[in-house]
Image (cartoon, rainbow, N blue to C red; front, top):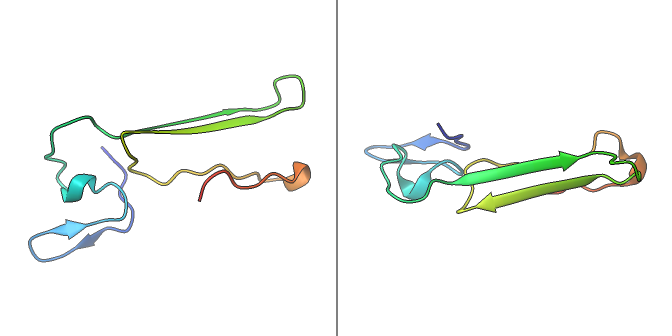
Length: 79
C-alpha cells in the first residue's frame, strides 16, 4: 500500500501528486518499488541531533523533519 496525496479521479484515468507511480493508480507497473527511509538520532551525548531522509528510486509520500521547539534555531529539513 502506498500513500497518495492530491488524488484527482477523472473519466477513465486519474492522477495524484504523490503515490501515482508512473501515472498508474492501480500500481500495475513492473520494476523496483519506491522507497523512503527516515531516521532521527536525538542527543547522542554531545548535544548534537542528526536527521536523515533518504529517497530510493523516487518517492511516494511527502516527508519532512521540523523542530517543535526552536531553541536551537533549527530549520525544517524538507519542504
